[in-house]
Length: 471
Image (cartoon, rainbow, N blue to C red; front, side):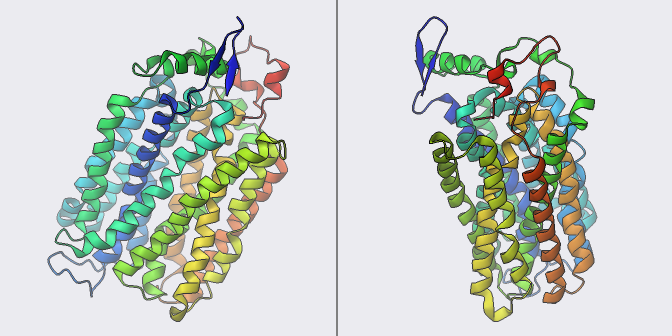
C-alpha cells in the first residue's frame, strides 16, 4: 500500500509496524476485559455445584433468580459509564482510560473470592457492579484509538481483529476454568487468573500503547509519515478536533446512527444470552460436568475466532476486487452474523440430554457465524463519524448494555426450572427475534457515508469525503 504526498513523494505501509502492535495490544486488552466479564458465568457453575469434587471451598445455594441478578450485575454499572467514559476517552485519549478501566477492574477480580466469603451474593453483586462502572469506557477507548491509528483501507481487517479479543477472552476463561476449579486453587482461582491477566496486560499497554502515532516514541518515522499522510479526513488532521463540541442533538436525531444503535442492542441481547447462559444450559439440559462443560462451552468461541479471520479475508477480497461496495459489505456480513444463528438457536430449545453432540454443533454454528456482525455494525460508528466514533460507541453501547443487563434477568424470569427445556426454548426464541428485527432495520436504513455533523461548521466536505465509505 502506498500513499502519495502533495510533493510527489510516496510513503509505503510497513508490512508489520506500530499500528499492528497497537491492535495486538488492544486485542489482548479486550480479551482481559472479557475474561473478567465471563469469569462469573463459568465459576458460578462450580460455586453452586453440590457434587463438585473440591470440598475445600464453600458451596452456595443461590436460587436461579439470585443467580440471574449476579450474572447481570456487571451491566448495572457498565451501562452507566458508557457516555461519560466516551467523553473522557475523547478528552484525554484512549490510552489512559483503557488502562485504568481494565487494570482497576482486574484488581477487583482478585478481590472477588474474598467479597463472596465476607458478604455472600450481596457483596459480590456490589463488586461486579463496580467492575462494570470501571469498564464503561473500554469500548469507547478502543474506538477512539482505532480512529487515530487504523487506515480506512485496513478498518475491516485490523479493526475487527481487535474485537476478536471478545471471543478470545471468553475461550480462554472457558478452557482454563474447568482445570482451575478442579485444582487446589478451586473456583477462586478462576477470578485470580482473570485479575492477573489484566494487570500483566496493563504493564505492556503502559509502556507500548499510545494515543496517536505522533505520541508513539518507538515507531519508525516512515510509518508515522505514512499514517499521517493517509489520514485525510478531518478526524485525523484537524487541530480543532479535540475542542469540537459534541453535536448531541444531531447525533441523537440521525437515522443511520439510531438504526445502528438498535442493531447493536439486538446483537447485545443475543450475544449475552449465549455468553452468560451457555454454561448453565450445558449443565442443566445437556447434563455436562464442570470440565466437559468448560470444553464444550469454549468450542463455539474457538469457531468464532477462526471464522473472524475467514470473514476478514473474505470482506477485504470482495471490496478490493470490486465485488461489493463497503455499504453492501457491511450489510452482507451483518446479515450473516444475525440471521444465520437464528435457526440453530431455535433448534437448541428442542435438544435432549442424549443429543449433546448435536447441541454443540448448533452452538458452534450460532456463536461462530455470529462474529460476522463485527464486520457490519461494530465498525459502522467509525464509518458514520470518525471524529466522534468513541462518542457514538459510548451512546450505542450504553443502550446495548441495558439489553445485556436485561437478557440474564429475562432468563431468570422465564427459566424457573433450569432443567425444563421448554422454558429454555422461550429464551432462544426471544434471542432469535432480536437478531431478525435488528438486522432487518440495518439492511433497510443503515449507511456508511460520513455524516455532515462529523465536521466543524466551517468545514465543507469535499466530494471524495461525501462518498467516503469507511474502507
